Image 1 (tube, rainbow, N blue to C red):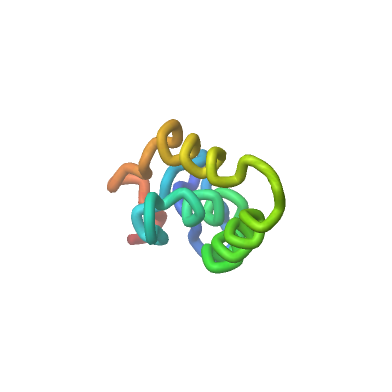
Image 2 (tube, helix red, strand yellow):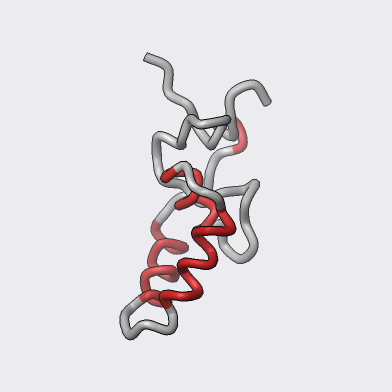
Length: 80
């Protein structure tokens, strides 16, 4: 079975990593988007909206930024 890394078409990432391609701050929202197969913009909007709701969204972002590894350059995608 072939594992795909990064989003290619409708194939989603097989492991959660911070994105090098879709990063604005730490690549967390881009990495979550690649893992779920969603648009990075959608994940960013949902994250920003979650700040208005009481809860630990900023802490969750910081923990993900610290603990989730950045995507390796060799695993960026199939056919690149």
